[in-house]
Image (cartoon, rainbow, N blue to C red; front, side, top):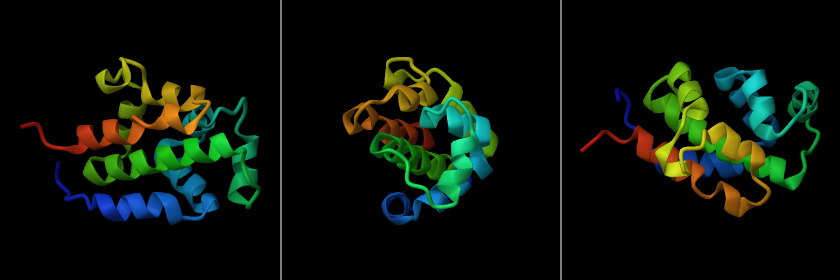
Length: 127
């Protein structure tokens, strides 16, 4: 891990960054197809509307903010390719589910509670 991550700054940004900027960041670093999938969309047309200021359903907002929080940590610690690999790979902290699937199938905030801690654990150097 080359960069020191300021977890508090990322946590604050994940709560305060306007949603259109969250969507733009996620599209830039994960791509539209991955973002549409984790947001629970059947196609990516809605992403453009969200970037333009349309408001997603509450659970979609939470999926986006959780994904943004995790992506910011992963991109700052590694790079876009590693972030994408983390989202699509099996994760032992998520009962061997891929984080992208956990995000897509989340029906409540409680379903998302392990995404950020799993990403944070991945960004920390092994002891």
